[in-house]
Image (tube, rainbow, N blue to C red; front, side, top):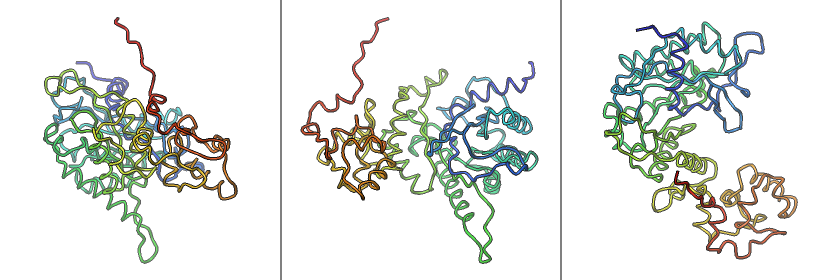
Length: 409
């Protein structure tokens, strides 16, 4: 059997990494090499592209260290019983690729995950060694995100947080029952304990001693997690409820949702319908509503438990709660303005700032960033009245995509 080249490994392990979603680098510690020392930077604009909440595009080399794995999770393409082609990078190969990709201006950082080889500690030790080598030997100041392993020793997690900007620990599935059924070798309690430990270490790193010195840095960009959507029968309401609990318990920077892709050789094990990518998209929109618009997860999902795939969840909420509309743009509090479809946090802040000095008119809303084709039925102000629009039985049809004629061939 021919020995794989580094290019062969890159083709296999970059493709295998596409199932890992959490790779945004917002919130990281600002470092650069403009002083002539070191290499790279952890910020700026930008073969994986991650978008930070402030709109910056971060380019990351996104790979697995290996797709060998001792676990046999039913939903995972790299599980022990899968027939995929396997490969494994050495520590020096990952370091070499990262530096060479950076020098060619392809990337600004590294996103590294891995299957479990030999044991969680052995795998985590190699990942930590990669991050440490990049920082110490190569003086790399770019962004590093490590997917950590919950079963690894706390000392290894601690060292990972010393070298990486962000750590993430996957909760895998929305419910403990689903995890027990589909990944019996993993423990929900172990995962949550590891996430709590990362939170505690991050908070300790922010403290200062009585002498005013700060503790050693630990994952300054925080931690995130990934949740697979569609591998079990959890509803969107249950998924959002689980995400809300994770945010509150572990102060996560982000929960990432990954639509389950059926694996050909596991159809007899997991005969579930693949959810459309639109479901993943709607969950991200609903997550945004919880984080930035003040919605509780119970408000977002309808009684059926599933989000409407045809219209965004904020619009769906407005249509289901028409008694709150129309909103007087010149009088409504910030909390209510944020619930108007087509109004975002920035546009609402601009509205509040402007109306301190004058009465806003309809034509003033476009310059502040409002999307009026969504907002019209839900607002009133000088120059515009929705009249009977909020009570129109066919209002939803104005926003839903038009029906398509399907082909028979």
